[in-house]
Image 1 (cartoon, rainbow, N blue to C red):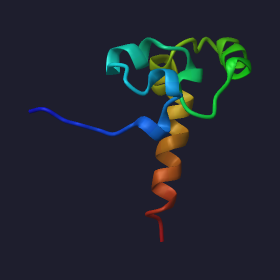
Image 2: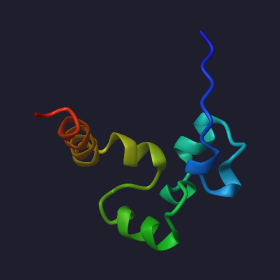
Image 3: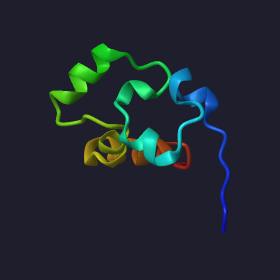
Length: 73
């Protein structure tokens, strides 16, 4: 099944037309709002790509907690 997602506003202009594989292999600054300085800081945590950022257990846990907070009574 083909899936289409508009990520233009979530990505830096240089990556708006990149493939998913290209974005995942790109530095975190491929995400809109992040800079080369963020790349440096995240590299200190072993995060060098968007894929690394998205699969980092701490960031993933934080994302789940935020999502759950919206559902909690």
